[in-house]
Structures are given as C-alpha cells and as structure tokens.
Length: 461
Image (cartoon, rainbow, N blue to C red):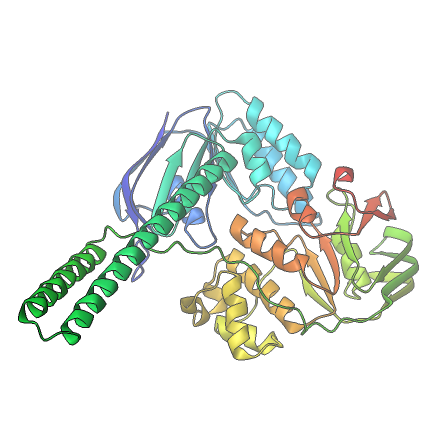
C-alpha cells in the first residue's frame, strides 16, 4: 500500500497553478506533517489525496484501504474539544490503514494533544497525513514533512521543526551570499565611476593629444566594464533581495488605555439548566495579561463570554465590565461579503496609509485587499479580524484560541504584535509556545466549577 504523487499539478478554473509537478510518496507506518502558510493549498492537497478532487495533470496513486478522515466536527451539545476528541477516538478504533487529519488539535487541550500523539506513534503500520499549525504536536508525531507554499512543494524526511531550522540556515546562507554579491557590485560600480571621472579629469586638464587619446582609451575601457556589469545583472546570476518576514513594527498610541479595574466578578455563577461555574470572584486591571486555562469542557469559553457580558444563558451574582472589549471567537466567520480592505477600514482607527502598512505587517499583500472576505482562507479571515481589532484601539482584547487556522509565521507575527499591546489581554489557548510569547501576568485556572487566579508560570500549564 502506498500513496504516490507523480508529477501532479492542480489549478482551480481561471486561477494560477496551486501545485505544479509535485512528486512524493508515503508508505504504511509513515506519518506525514503537512505544513505551510494560510491559503497555500494544504486542504486542497488533502482533497486530492482523498479523491474528492482530481489532478489537472499528472497522477495520484491511492492504495490505502480503509481510509478515515477527521476534520472539524459538529459540536452537538458538547464543547468543540469534546466533539473533536469523540471523532478522533471513533476514527482510531475503526483501525484504518490511512488516517487523514485536518487540524486535529485545533480544539484539544494540552493533555489530549499529548495523548493523541502517543496513540498515533504507538499504532503499528498506521499511515497518517496531518495538516496542522501546531509544531509541538507535529514534532512529536511526524516522520516526514511536506511543505506546501505558493508555487513550491518540498518533501523531506525530518520533523517540521528540523525542516524549518534547515530552511532558516538556508535563508541565512542566502542572505550572506546576497550581501557579498551586493558588496562586489558596489565595488565594481565605484571602480567604474572612478575610472570615468579620472578619464574626464585628464581630458579636461590637458591639450596634449597623447594624453587626450589615453584618456579616451580609459573612458572606453570603463564603458566596456560597465556594459559587462549590466549584462551580468541581466543574466539572472545576480541574487534577488531576500524578503523580510512580516513582523509588526507599529506603535500602539491609538489604544484607549484606562486605569484601575476593567472587570470585576463578585460571587458570579452562570450556566443553562445547571451551573457551569459558580461562586466566582475575579478582577482584572488595566494592562493585565491573563490566560484562561483548563481542560476541554470545563467552561473556558463560557467564562470568557460571561465576563464580556455575552453569555447566552443565565447569570447570577455581580458581573461588571468597565471597558469595552474587542472579541475574537473560537469559531470564526467574518460574515461579510465585502472586500478585505473595506472590512478592515470600517473597523480601524488608523489612517489609510498606516492601515495598509498594518495589514501588510500581518502578511496581507496588495492583491488581498481587493479580495472578498469570504474568498480568504479561514486563517486569513482570523488574521484579518485580529488585525482589525488591534487597529481599532479597543482597551480590552479577548481572544478565544486565536491560534486556530493560523500558520506559524502568522502566529509569530500576531504574538509579537500582541506582546506590545498596552491594553488588557484575555487569552484562551492550548499552545504553551504561543502563550509564553505574550508576556502574560496572570492565569485563571478552571478546576471543577471553580476558578482560581494565580501568577503566570509556563511550567504550570
């Protein structure tokens, strides 16, 4: 049994090639991590492998049987994490030959992520193809990595982190070669300028015919060297300038920061037919950075909605939200048919020029701005909403697992940007790597039906 991609190419109608001449193989027992930026075609690759799409050119050989696929489940009366765990359990006990997973850890808490990784490693002969942005999980599982990027596909026998370290070393080596080549070009250009100026100086400063003939020969020699340099630069042998990663480089003076408490809960309880949490006492102050942690189904998202005044069930006790919050829900849909730029502009407190630079820092290029919000990938939609909320100047940002759907460069840029955010930050996340980058001060830990507030410590997750 094998999967073989043989010079496979694919494109949607009237679109550029998404994949071109892709070749790769996998055999029983191999576990492939599929990584890459948002919108590069990872989910499309899964559809091609599963047979719900066919290649535009080339071939795919699919020999595995039976095949199980786990994508976003429907949460019918459960939390999203519980629903995902139920689907994963059903898939594994069905004893598939090939298990295809699309973001399996998206809703899982840390303990379930570790348990899933252990299951996948220990199941003999199981072939796994997993799309995920959770590098810690993939490193614990994968035996090889397929990197999907615009116009590029690479297959390597390494974990994603090892592959990314290799890419970083390649980038660093390229930057060194580019810098050395630019220095060489600068020396040649300076030498040509000096030779030309010397010839002109000699010709202007003498009437001696011999000296003037000599000056013309020198000028002709400089012109010849200049043409050789121009030919070299047009030949394709000159390296292109490396592209910088998109990092947030903006100030936060548009944020309306207050002082003192921004929210307070005194003896709070909430739930539906019965309490989810009860007798809750919490307080958050301006500038505080709080992580809400706990296992799946303990009520983290419900607590966040309750303190924001958005919980749809009943509440008792005193709940006071002093400042207005910007809120990114766990399951996000922009719900907007307009263009990306208009969506951002309607919500931003920034001038247009700075707003465009702000979006660019989140990885949005000029071509994205005219696209409709609905045409963006899920990850791009999440980035768009976070970028818009951050640019709106909310004094409180509440983010429910913002890492959902985000590729690792986007998650890095978001975490770096939020690390400088001066307002109050409330974050639910199951990714210790992401939480550790946010400069958190406090943990609200849900245990049973109670909430404990304690100082931040990554080792406590």
